[in-house]
Image 1 (cartoon, rainbow, N blue to C red):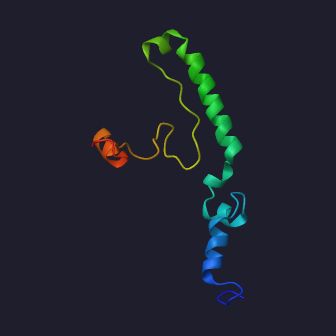
Image 2 (cartoon, helix red, strand yellow):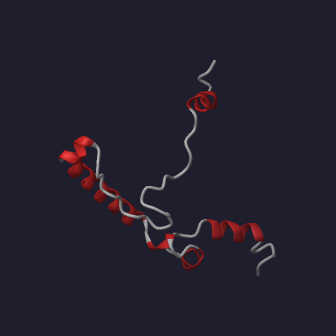
Length: 100
């Protein structure tokens, strides 16, 4: 029973935290993101790369215009949305200890 020595709250937290991506709980909690698994993300990356390579060989590609739109990933607001934020070079050098 939950809350006993047999199954305490930390055990439940650990179980939920490490559920597989295809679990029913994660599908309910994150319906948009649970549609795509690793294979779907990899296939979209391959398709985007092939489209970019084909575009790069065209006149538009050589001039840097009309770049193909990437496949929209679940949970993203737009095709070109960046994940994370950039770090200033000086901040990264400090973090890595390279500014000595």
